[in-house]
Amino acid sequence: MDDPEPFRADVAYIACHVRDGQVITHIAGVHALGSVGAAHYLSKHVAELCAEMGEKPFSMAVAAELDCLTPKVTAVSASRRAWV
Image (cartoon, rainbow, N blue to C red):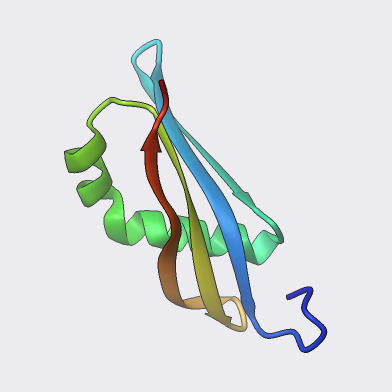
């Protein structure tokens, strides 16, 4: 959105870890719509993430193209990385 010729897209950071038996998920978009795209990505891929990562803490980045406030396409920008 900050490009000289902006279009409705943004990126976001997602992180997930377990603390005291509770799953904590962090979402941070560069802009608010990036966070909407990240939440949309999680809603479609949470089962896949849980199967692959289990309870290992991880982070990743996603990109989203939006139609007004609705994500049209979300894709992984930086693949899942387990925390060490």
